Image 1 (cartoon, rainbow, N blue to C red):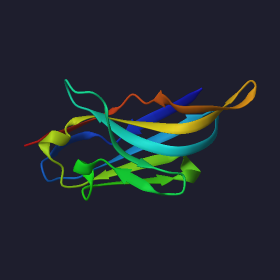
Image 2: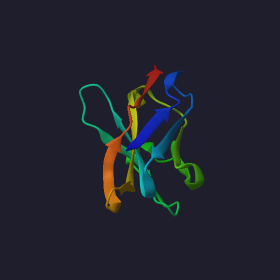
Image 3: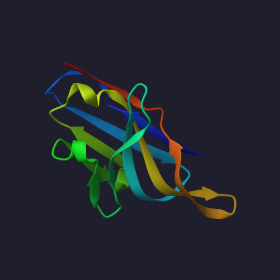
Image 4: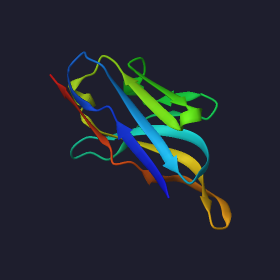
Amino acid sequence: QVQLVESGGGLVQAGGSLRLSCAASGSIFSINAMGWYRQAPGKPRALVAVISSGGSTNYADSMKGRFTISRDNAKNTVYLQMNNLKHEDTAVYYCNADLTAWSKGGPEPMPFAYWGQGTQVYVSS
């Protein structure tokens, strides 16, 4: 079993900052890319940012320059630093990972198979 646990959400005023964390644990053999997604009310879940195991990053256009994704491979943890938050950033933020898990038959690729419970971010205007 693999668990992804997000934390760090909350209520912040527009222009403020938050730092989200997501820790992966359990029967993990290796982790490749890790990513943050968000889902606003009435909207589909959308990619926010992704980071490779080597540290290469990609961002959705609306987050470029405001959000920074990083990771600590030793801790299997990915972070999302969010600055200059806007009301439209209000959403539940989820993390996911392209990982290989231990199974009875050995390492088994499980790309983006696990989701955390999400952490709510609310930005007041």
